[in-house]
Image (cartoon, rainbow, N blue to C red):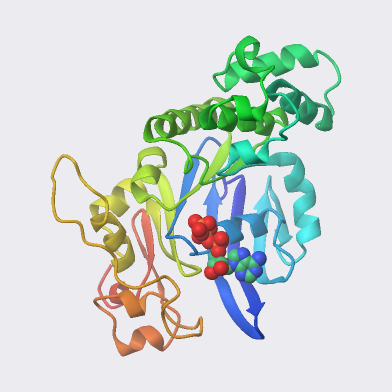
Length: 320
Ligand SMILES: Nc1ncnc2c1ncn2[C@@H]1O[C@H](COP(=O)(O)OP(=O)(O)OP(=O)(O)O)[C@@H](O)[C@H]1O
Protein backbone atom coordinates (compact mmCIF):
# COMPACT_ATOMS: atom_id res chain seq x y z
CA UNK A 1 0.00 0.00 0.00
CA UNK A 2 1.75 3.17 -1.16
CA UNK A 3 -0.02 5.74 1.04
CA UNK A 4 0.69 3.89 4.29
CA UNK A 5 2.81 5.64 6.91
CA UNK A 6 3.55 2.39 8.74
CA UNK A 7 3.64 -1.09 7.34
CA UNK A 8 4.84 -4.48 8.48
CA UNK A 9 5.68 -7.25 6.05
CA UNK A 10 6.10 -10.91 6.85
CA UNK A 11 7.03 -10.51 10.52
CA UNK A 12 7.91 -13.80 12.21
CA UNK A 13 9.10 -14.16 15.80
CA UNK A 14 10.34 -17.24 17.67
CA UNK A 15 10.48 -17.74 21.40
CA UNK A 16 12.48 -20.44 23.15
CA UNK A 17 11.20 -21.69 26.47
CA UNK A 18 12.42 -24.82 28.27
CA UNK A 19 14.60 -25.60 25.24
CA UNK A 20 11.56 -25.62 22.94
CA UNK A 21 11.37 -23.17 20.06
CA UNK A 22 7.92 -21.82 19.17
CA UNK A 23 6.91 -19.51 16.32
CA UNK A 24 4.77 -17.05 18.31
CA UNK A 25 4.22 -14.69 15.36
CA UNK A 26 4.06 -16.22 11.91
CA UNK A 27 4.31 -14.01 8.82
CA UNK A 28 2.27 -11.00 9.95
CA UNK A 29 1.73 -8.15 7.47
CA UNK A 30 -0.38 -5.01 7.84
CA UNK A 31 -0.29 -1.34 6.88
CA UNK A 32 -1.79 1.81 8.34
CA UNK A 33 -2.52 5.14 6.65
CA UNK A 34 -2.29 8.60 8.21
CA UNK A 35 -5.65 9.58 9.72
CA UNK A 36 -6.72 5.95 10.12
CA UNK A 37 -7.53 3.92 13.24
CA UNK A 38 -6.56 0.37 12.31
CA UNK A 39 -7.78 -2.50 14.49
CA UNK A 40 -5.72 -5.55 15.45
CA UNK A 41 -8.00 -8.08 17.14
CA UNK A 42 -7.56 -11.51 18.68
CA UNK A 43 -8.04 -13.45 21.88
CA UNK A 44 -5.59 -13.08 24.72
CA UNK A 45 -2.20 -14.58 23.87
CA UNK A 46 -2.69 -14.48 20.11
CA UNK A 47 0.44 -12.35 19.62
CA UNK A 48 -0.94 -8.83 19.07
CA UNK A 49 1.27 -7.01 21.59
CA UNK A 50 4.45 -8.91 20.76
CA UNK A 51 3.96 -8.19 17.04
CA UNK A 52 3.44 -4.46 17.51
CA UNK A 53 6.18 -4.00 20.11
CA UNK A 54 8.62 -5.82 17.82
CA UNK A 55 7.49 -3.72 14.86
CA UNK A 56 8.54 -0.56 16.73
CA UNK A 57 11.87 -2.05 17.82
CA UNK A 58 10.87 -3.10 21.34
CA UNK A 59 11.06 -6.90 21.15
CA UNK A 60 11.61 -8.43 24.59
CA UNK A 61 15.09 -9.88 25.20
CA UNK A 62 15.15 -13.55 24.35
CA UNK A 63 12.72 -13.28 21.46
CA UNK A 64 14.20 -14.11 18.08
CA UNK A 65 12.94 -11.94 15.22
CA UNK A 66 13.21 -14.42 12.36
CA UNK A 67 12.04 -12.20 9.51
CA UNK A 68 10.14 -9.02 8.76
CA UNK A 69 10.41 -5.58 7.23
CA UNK A 70 8.93 -2.42 8.68
CA UNK A 71 8.38 0.75 6.67
CA UNK A 72 7.87 3.96 8.61
CA UNK A 73 7.66 7.37 6.95
CA UNK A 74 8.85 5.92 3.63
CA UNK A 75 11.96 4.12 4.90
CA UNK A 76 12.02 0.33 4.96
CA UNK A 77 14.06 -1.44 7.64
CA UNK A 78 14.83 -5.02 8.55
CA UNK A 79 12.92 -5.91 11.73
CA UNK A 80 15.76 -8.19 12.81
CA UNK A 81 17.82 -5.08 13.51
CA UNK A 82 15.69 -3.88 16.43
CA UNK A 83 18.07 -1.06 17.33
CA UNK A 84 17.97 0.49 13.87
CA UNK A 85 14.18 0.14 13.86
CA UNK A 86 13.76 1.70 17.30
CA UNK A 87 15.67 4.90 16.51
CA UNK A 88 13.23 6.52 14.04
CA UNK A 89 10.17 5.08 15.74
CA UNK A 90 11.20 6.41 19.15
CA UNK A 91 10.83 9.90 17.65
CA UNK A 92 7.81 9.39 15.41
CA UNK A 93 5.68 6.91 17.35
CA UNK A 94 3.98 6.92 20.75
CA UNK A 95 2.56 4.06 22.79
CA UNK A 96 -0.49 3.87 25.04
CA UNK A 97 -1.05 0.94 27.37
CA UNK A 98 -3.86 -0.50 29.43
CA UNK A 99 -2.85 0.66 32.88
CA UNK A 100 -2.22 4.39 32.45
CA UNK A 101 -2.28 5.06 36.20
CA UNK A 102 0.48 2.53 36.74
CA UNK A 103 2.46 3.94 33.81
CA UNK A 104 2.48 7.50 35.19
CA UNK A 105 5.19 8.43 37.71
CA UNK A 106 3.47 8.42 41.14
CA UNK A 107 5.47 11.35 42.58
CA UNK A 108 4.89 13.73 39.67
CA UNK A 109 1.70 15.75 39.20
CA UNK A 110 -0.25 15.25 35.97
CA UNK A 111 0.98 18.61 34.68
CA UNK A 112 4.63 17.83 35.45
CA UNK A 113 4.39 14.46 33.66
CA UNK A 114 3.36 16.23 30.46
CA UNK A 115 5.92 19.00 30.96
CA UNK A 116 8.69 16.44 31.42
CA UNK A 117 7.75 14.71 28.17
CA UNK A 118 7.73 18.05 26.36
CA UNK A 119 11.23 18.79 27.70
CA UNK A 120 12.45 15.35 26.61
CA UNK A 121 11.05 16.09 23.15
CA UNK A 122 13.22 19.24 23.04
CA UNK A 123 10.63 21.90 23.95
CA UNK A 124 12.10 24.68 26.06
CA UNK A 125 9.86 27.73 25.69
CA UNK A 126 6.23 28.40 26.65
CA UNK A 127 6.14 25.07 28.46
CA UNK A 128 3.30 26.11 30.75
CA UNK A 129 1.04 27.14 27.88
CA UNK A 130 1.97 24.03 25.87
CA UNK A 131 1.02 21.82 28.82
CA UNK A 132 -2.29 23.69 29.23
CA UNK A 133 -2.98 23.29 25.52
CA UNK A 134 -2.23 19.55 25.60
CA UNK A 135 -4.59 19.18 28.54
CA UNK A 136 -7.26 20.99 26.52
CA UNK A 137 -6.64 18.73 23.48
CA UNK A 138 -7.19 15.58 25.57
CA UNK A 139 -10.31 17.03 27.18
CA UNK A 140 -8.92 17.90 30.63
CA UNK A 141 -8.86 21.24 32.40
CA UNK A 142 -5.30 22.02 33.45
CA UNK A 143 -6.43 24.22 36.34
CA UNK A 144 -8.49 21.33 37.74
CA UNK A 145 -6.15 18.41 37.11
CA UNK A 146 -2.64 19.70 36.40
CA UNK A 147 -1.68 19.78 40.11
CA UNK A 148 -3.04 16.32 40.93
CA UNK A 149 -0.95 13.20 41.46
CA UNK A 150 -1.87 10.00 39.54
CA UNK A 151 -3.61 8.42 42.56
CA UNK A 152 -5.86 11.51 42.83
CA UNK A 153 -7.38 11.15 39.35
CA UNK A 154 -9.66 8.50 37.80
CA UNK A 155 -8.48 5.78 35.43
CA UNK A 156 -10.05 7.61 32.46
CA UNK A 157 -8.37 10.89 33.44
CA UNK A 158 -5.04 9.07 33.86
CA UNK A 159 -5.43 7.63 30.35
CA UNK A 160 -6.03 11.19 29.05
CA UNK A 161 -2.87 12.39 30.83
CA UNK A 162 -1.01 9.47 29.22
CA UNK A 163 -2.45 10.61 25.86
CA UNK A 164 -1.27 14.17 26.51
CA UNK A 165 2.23 12.76 27.18
CA UNK A 166 2.00 10.72 23.97
CA UNK A 167 0.92 13.78 21.95
CA UNK A 168 3.70 15.93 23.46
CA UNK A 169 6.16 14.17 21.18
CA UNK A 170 4.00 15.06 18.14
CA UNK A 171 3.85 11.45 16.90
CA UNK A 172 2.71 10.36 13.46
CA UNK A 173 1.92 6.85 14.69
CA UNK A 174 0.20 5.82 17.92
CA UNK A 175 0.10 2.20 19.07
CA UNK A 176 -2.75 1.88 21.55
CA UNK A 177 -2.52 -1.52 23.27
CA UNK A 178 -5.87 -2.25 24.96
CA UNK A 179 -5.95 1.39 26.19
CA UNK A 180 -9.45 1.16 27.63
CA UNK A 181 -9.56 -2.37 29.05
CA UNK A 182 -9.32 -1.15 32.66
CA UNK A 183 -12.09 1.45 32.21
CA UNK A 184 -15.87 1.33 32.55
CA UNK A 185 -17.92 1.07 29.34
CA UNK A 186 -18.96 4.76 29.25
CA UNK A 187 -15.41 6.05 29.76
CA UNK A 188 -14.15 3.50 27.25
CA UNK A 189 -16.56 4.77 24.58
CA UNK A 190 -15.69 8.42 25.32
CA UNK A 191 -11.96 7.80 25.11
CA UNK A 192 -12.17 5.81 21.91
CA UNK A 193 -14.38 8.44 20.23
CA UNK A 194 -11.87 11.00 21.35
CA UNK A 195 -8.95 8.98 19.92
CA UNK A 196 -10.78 8.57 16.61
CA UNK A 197 -11.39 12.33 16.40
CA UNK A 198 -7.78 13.06 17.26
CA UNK A 199 -6.61 10.71 14.58
CA UNK A 200 -8.63 12.58 11.92
CA UNK A 201 -7.72 16.08 13.15
CA UNK A 202 -3.98 15.40 13.37
CA UNK A 203 -3.70 12.94 10.49
CA UNK A 204 -2.35 10.52 13.06
CA UNK A 205 -2.16 6.81 12.26
CA UNK A 206 -3.40 4.65 15.14
CA UNK A 207 -3.14 0.90 15.62
CA UNK A 208 -5.78 -0.09 18.15
CA UNK A 209 -4.99 -3.46 19.71
CA UNK A 210 -7.97 -5.13 21.37
CA UNK A 211 -9.51 -8.51 22.10
CA UNK A 212 -13.02 -7.12 21.76
CA UNK A 213 -14.18 -7.35 18.15
CA UNK A 214 -17.32 -5.25 18.63
CA UNK A 215 -15.27 -2.44 20.16
CA UNK A 216 -12.83 -2.42 17.27
CA UNK A 217 -15.62 -2.60 14.73
CA UNK A 218 -17.14 0.56 16.18
CA UNK A 219 -13.98 2.60 15.78
CA UNK A 220 -11.95 1.06 12.94
CA UNK A 221 -12.87 0.98 9.26
CA UNK A 222 -10.15 -1.61 8.57
CA UNK A 223 -8.88 -4.39 10.76
CA UNK A 224 -6.85 -7.57 11.03
CA UNK A 225 -7.82 -10.63 13.02
CA UNK A 226 -5.08 -12.71 14.60
CA UNK A 227 -5.13 -16.24 15.98
CA UNK A 228 -2.15 -18.04 17.54
CA UNK A 229 0.40 -15.77 15.92
CA UNK A 230 -1.14 -15.90 12.43
CA UNK A 231 -3.37 -13.40 10.68
CA UNK A 232 -6.55 -15.15 9.66
CA UNK A 233 -8.46 -12.30 8.02
CA UNK A 234 -7.79 -8.68 7.09
CA UNK A 235 -9.87 -6.04 5.41
CA UNK A 236 -12.67 -3.54 5.51
CA UNK A 237 -14.84 -3.78 8.61
CA UNK A 238 -18.12 -3.65 6.68
CA UNK A 239 -17.14 -6.50 4.40
CA UNK A 240 -15.77 -8.61 7.24
CA UNK A 241 -18.98 -8.19 9.23
CA UNK A 242 -21.25 -8.73 6.22
CA UNK A 243 -19.39 -11.80 4.94
CA UNK A 244 -16.83 -13.14 7.41
CA UNK A 245 -14.68 -15.52 5.38
CA UNK A 246 -12.60 -17.22 8.07
CA UNK A 247 -14.32 -19.64 10.48
CA UNK A 248 -12.50 -17.89 13.36
CA UNK A 249 -13.85 -14.47 12.34
CA UNK A 250 -17.27 -16.03 12.09
CA UNK A 251 -16.83 -17.50 15.58
CA UNK A 252 -15.81 -14.11 17.02
CA UNK A 253 -18.81 -12.41 15.41
CA UNK A 254 -21.18 -15.11 16.67
CA UNK A 255 -19.82 -14.51 20.18
CA UNK A 256 -20.73 -10.78 20.08
CA UNK A 257 -24.14 -9.98 21.62
CA UNK A 258 -26.52 -8.12 19.26
CA UNK A 259 -29.01 -6.05 21.27
CA UNK A 260 -31.15 -5.34 18.17
CA UNK A 261 -31.52 -9.02 17.27
CA UNK A 262 -30.93 -11.11 20.41
CA UNK A 263 -29.82 -14.69 19.65
CA UNK A 264 -28.01 -17.50 21.38
CA UNK A 265 -24.30 -16.71 21.70
CA UNK A 266 -21.95 -19.38 20.41
CA UNK A 267 -18.71 -19.50 22.43
CA UNK A 268 -15.55 -20.45 20.56
CA UNK A 269 -14.39 -23.94 21.50
CA UNK A 270 -10.79 -24.73 22.47
CA UNK A 271 -7.85 -22.51 23.28
CA UNK A 272 -5.64 -20.32 21.10
CA UNK A 273 -2.49 -22.43 21.39
CA UNK A 274 -4.22 -25.79 21.85
CA UNK A 275 -3.36 -27.32 18.46
CA UNK A 276 -0.48 -29.61 17.49
CA UNK A 277 3.00 -28.00 17.35
CA UNK A 278 4.50 -26.57 14.16
CA UNK A 279 3.76 -23.39 12.27
CA UNK A 280 3.59 -24.82 8.75
CA UNK A 281 -0.12 -25.41 9.12
CA UNK A 282 -3.35 -23.62 9.95
CA UNK A 283 -3.27 -22.98 13.69
CA UNK A 284 -7.04 -22.77 13.92
CA UNK A 285 -7.67 -26.30 12.66
CA UNK A 286 -8.09 -27.83 16.16
CA UNK A 287 -11.02 -25.44 16.78
CA UNK A 288 -12.46 -25.34 13.27
CA UNK A 289 -15.75 -27.06 12.37
CA UNK A 290 -14.59 -27.31 8.72
CA UNK A 291 -11.07 -28.69 9.37
CA UNK A 292 -9.68 -31.36 7.06
CA UNK A 293 -6.36 -33.16 6.77
CA UNK A 294 -5.03 -30.55 4.33
CA UNK A 295 -5.30 -27.83 7.02
CA UNK A 296 -2.48 -29.47 8.97
CA UNK A 297 -0.41 -30.24 5.89
CA UNK A 298 0.76 -26.72 5.09
CA UNK A 299 0.35 -23.02 5.70
CA UNK A 300 -3.12 -21.72 4.88
CA UNK A 301 -3.11 -20.00 1.47
CA UNK A 302 -3.78 -16.27 1.26
CA UNK A 303 -6.95 -15.67 -0.71
CA UNK A 304 -7.96 -12.17 -1.79
CA UNK A 305 -11.54 -11.01 -2.28
CA UNK A 306 -12.67 -7.40 -2.87
CA UNK A 307 -11.87 -5.49 0.34
CA UNK A 308 -10.87 -8.66 2.21
CA UNK A 309 -8.00 -11.13 2.50
CA UNK A 310 -8.40 -14.48 4.20
CA UNK A 311 -5.92 -17.23 5.08
CA UNK A 312 -7.95 -20.38 4.72
CA UNK A 313 -8.01 -23.44 2.50
CA UNK A 314 -11.84 -23.30 2.30
CA UNK A 315 -11.69 -20.24 0.05
CA UNK A 316 -8.73 -21.39 -2.03
CA UNK A 317 -10.98 -24.08 -3.41
CA UNK A 318 -13.84 -21.88 -4.52
CA UNK A 319 -13.94 -19.46 -7.48
CA UNK A 320 -13.33 -15.77 -6.59
N1 LIG B 1 8.88 -12.14 26.43
C1 LIG B 1 8.29 -13.23 25.96
N2 LIG B 1 9.03 -14.31 25.65
C2 LIG B 1 8.46 -15.41 25.16
N3 LIG B 1 7.14 -15.55 24.89
C3 LIG B 1 6.35 -14.52 25.19
C4 LIG B 1 6.87 -13.30 25.74
N4 LIG B 1 5.84 -12.44 25.91
C5 LIG B 1 4.72 -13.10 25.49
N5 LIG B 1 5.03 -14.34 25.07
C6 LIG B 1 4.08 -15.32 24.50
O1 LIG B 1 3.71 -14.87 23.20
C7 LIG B 1 2.33 -15.12 22.93
C8 LIG B 1 1.67 -13.84 22.49
O2 LIG B 1 1.63 -12.90 23.58
P1 LIG B 1 1.05 -11.42 23.41
O3 LIG B 1 1.23 -10.74 24.72
O4 LIG B 1 1.61 -10.78 22.21
O5 LIG B 1 -0.49 -11.71 23.16
P2 LIG B 1 -1.70 -10.70 23.02
O6 LIG B 1 -2.48 -11.16 21.84
O7 LIG B 1 -1.22 -9.31 23.01
O8 LIG B 1 -2.52 -11.02 24.34
P3 LIG B 1 -3.08 -10.07 25.49
O9 LIG B 1 -4.34 -9.48 24.93
O10 LIG B 1 -3.34 -11.01 26.61
O11 LIG B 1 -2.01 -9.08 25.80
C9 LIG B 1 1.76 -15.71 24.21
O12 LIG B 1 1.71 -17.11 24.04
C10 LIG B 1 2.77 -15.33 25.28
O13 LIG B 1 2.84 -16.31 26.30
